[in-house]
Amino acid sequence: MLTTRFVDGAPDWIEVATPDTEGAASFYGPLFGWEFRSAGPQGGGYGFFELAGQIVAGVTRVGPEQGPPVWTVYFQTSDADATAEAARTAGGGVASPPEQVMSQGRSAVLTDTAGVPFGVWQPERRAGLDRAGDAGSLLWAELHTPDVARAAAFFRRVLGWETSGTAFPGGVYTSVNPAGTGEDGTFGGLVPLADDPTDAESGAGPHWLPYFGADDPDAVVGRAVTLGGRVRLPATSVPGVGRLARLEDPYGAVFAVLRGDPGEQ
Image (cartoon, rainbow, N blue to C red; front, top):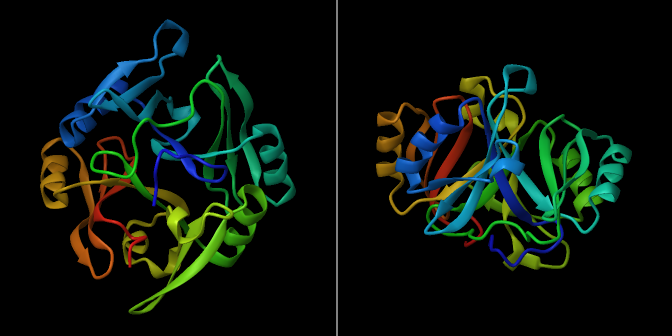
């Protein structure tokens, strides 16, 4: 399961890029009970979403020339520069080269072989999120990709992931975990893009889909619509997983909510 006991290869940060930081705060605040806090004058407009005083996500402003609004998942690495080079060697790319973030750590945004961005964070003073794995925080992360086997090989080489398959009606779900952590370290999965009807209906390309914990997904869906969001997938119960829904914020960033834990079978 996803926790804040971070190890290399595990998610340790998540942030939403949005054209309107205040608007995003007005959406996610009532939706999850998050409060926005600016990173201050040295933060370059960066800020944090907090729940009960604990950081659950970052938020950054982007212009039209910087790409679409999106949630980006970051993974821990002990050497951001080496991981960036490994991504290049494995057939991916470097969208934002490694850079120092004051005294907090070292960050980079990379791309996999399908061109999907993901982040890496080399911790120094800031280990990562303060809170994960429960309601109102990051609970699960899925990569929707055109080639599961190729994606698995890439991330095995770049981040040391291990994979395992779980049989479900209609197919096999590929779960992922950091090297050496086994089933207890499972934090997400790889989903064939072509097999997901919601992706097909929306015309979505390859992407990361973060799941945030929700005690009542149906209520979250209702609030999202009231706040100007869009429903990609209504609240649905999935045997062996839980109850989930996919949503889109008013600016187009896509995410999901979940009550349950796909890692628990």
